[in-house]
Picture 1: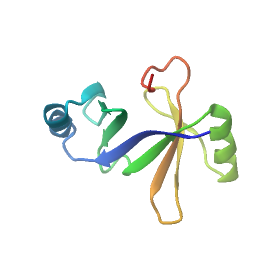
Picture 2: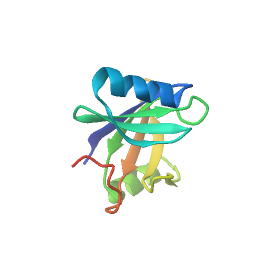
Picture 3: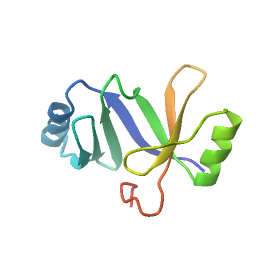
Picture 4: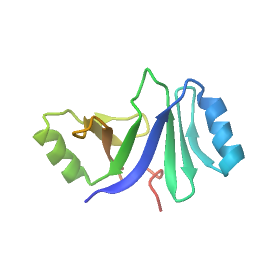
Length: 112
């Protein structure tokens, strides 16, 4: 099963862009450092990423079993992110980047 987890957009200015979304739209910063930010925006989440580190993408939340199965079908290695989530990146037929992401039970950035 898959559920929309977040949308990631690229920015060269993580802090300035995060502040914009807080000021203009009432976003809540869940995590921020110099290289990325994770915001709650309404019912969803928005990731701000540096252009040289991550592609713009749509992330779908999934189970560990489904993540492993999809990674195996596409011959991709699962990567563990700095926040403890695990994921893979792949592209749809139109070239849009998708991230499949798994949140271990101890990670609290997943929607309630």
